[in-house]
Image (cartoon, rainbow, N blue to C red; front, side, top):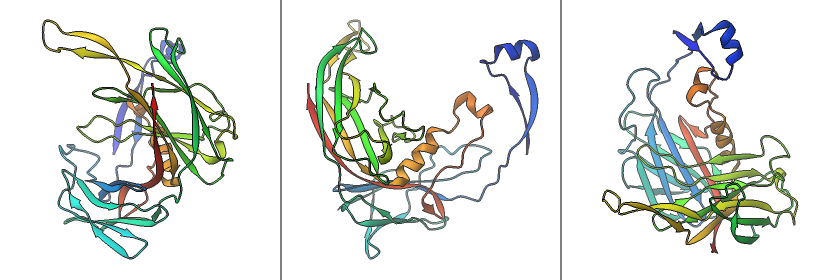
Amino acid sequence: MILAKKFCPIYLLTVLTLLGCQERSVEIDLRYDGDKLVMTSHLLADAPLEVYLEHTYKPVGLIPEDPTVSNANVYLIKDGRDSTLLAPAGKGVYQSEVLVAAGSSYVVRAVAPGYATAQSKPVRVPATGVEVRYDIEKNVSGVFDDRKIYALVKVYFNTIRPENEIFVLSLVSVYSDRTIANVLFINDNIFATEESCTASYAVRRKGEDPKPGVTLIKGSCMPVPGDPISISISTVTSTRVNPGTDSARSEREPASKLVLRVGKATQSWFDWSRIDNNQPIDIDNWLLTPQKTFTNIENGYGLVYASNETLIDIAL
């Protein structure tokens, strides 16, 4: 199929002044392999399992209002022998009360009418998490914005740059009705090592607000022991009081606490996130070629990944 597109990058003003917009023919391969299942699941050690199931659709034509698949049988297979049937729990959602075991290997399999049976490649849950300590400096102003109040948290990992491990790091501030992950890294002892040291990930589902994301860090890029990762996070937000009334107003609400999330993760989580972070969005779709998305699902698409994590409450 040949599509005509206009390329008008606003940041090339000098070139546009001389040449203006130019029309170019672009050949795009719109091959479609038929409807397949798309599976997403996070195997979190010592937690129950949830699987989210959707299906692919043609790259041209109408986008389905609801791409979820809710009539499937979804199985969790542990160490190649123990199989558990997950229970439907909403549109495209399947859950199990069986806790994921650290160190075990799992396969997630989905069987649905009209689709090829899809299953993940074996995913092994990290056997251990990580040990950390932290220091916190409260009520810091002017780190990035004089109008906001921040906390400066220094996280020390008790590890010596393991080459083949992926680490999880997140810090969120908790308020009365929401959790906000407005995190700013303020030192470069991770990012200066190499461009591909980190990736970010957030759960996004149609019709739902994104959940607070995490940063994934290569073990080879971790700071040396004794050198912290410093994070600045806002501890005050604006809350609407009496919305929809004549007395509606905004008030400053302090966070009740911070929650630090640390752990180890599978390489598949990092690999998928790195590609997703570099996919073109908005105007970039006119200029950059999309990358082939990482998947570890056979006869389908998606991602099944695992981690062993710890949540640490930090008082304010």
